[in-house]
Length: 66
Image 1 (cartoon, rainbow, N blue to C red):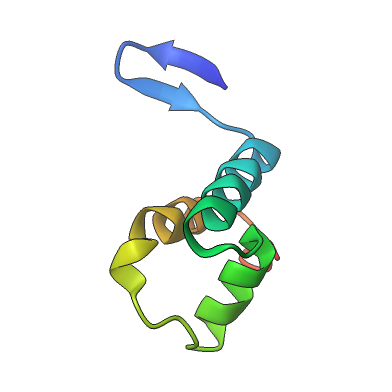
Image 2: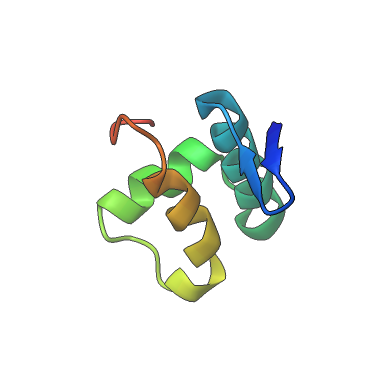
């Protein structure tokens, strides 16, 4: 993570994927890859529980991150 200024940071693709993976495991007991695959298939029931992770996933340049 690179601090750009007091209110902005830059994250690499690996850092974003790591954050998603860590939080998905903690919240749902699944990997970040599984979270993104389930989202794409419409298999997540409570999107509010992981909305922040889905926003992070949207920052990835390649939408096929998983």
